[in-house]
Amino acid sequence: MRNAERMIWSDMEVYYTYLPSVLIYGEFSRAAVKDTAYLKTFAGTDQRYTKYTCRVAIIELPFFLAAHAYSHVKGFPADGKTATYSRGIMLAGLFYFWMASLVLYRYERRYTTVNIVCITLGCIVLGTNLFYYTFYQPGMSHVYSFFFV
Image 1 (cartoon, rainbow, N blue to C red):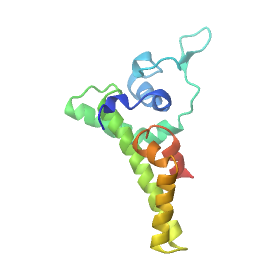
Image 2 (image 1 turned 135 degrees about the vertical axis):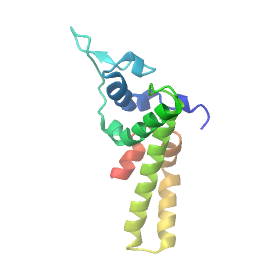
Image 3 (image 1 turned 135 degrees about the horizontal axis):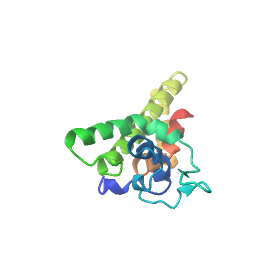
Image 4 (image 1 turned 90 degrees about the vertical axis):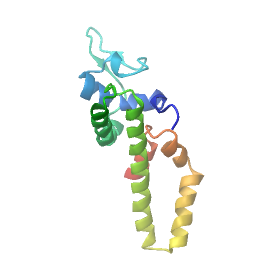
């Protein structure tokens, strides 16, 4: 993907922010993210929070850790914002997409033919927003929801 370092933005960054914030910076630091508008401060303190849940971050955790380790080994900046981390998130989206497709294939295969199953999967991928959210915005929760549902 061209400009992979620009992939983590908007809601994708809000979901992702738990990973660099907790594992690299130790808090919801402004250094952990590009867009700080959604980081709110508790009244009377310097403690920051986000209203989004950490479910997507937990799902992306193994891929973040792999990207973080790779960054250390190769000498890249281990700040959570480089293209290496974006590629880790892309791999997470692809992994959960293929796993969900495999589970759905095996389930449907019990009841119908291979051709019908392939047509069904093709219709799901191409007839919904799943293709877009898998290949263009894998940091959003959609592809992970597809896997878990």
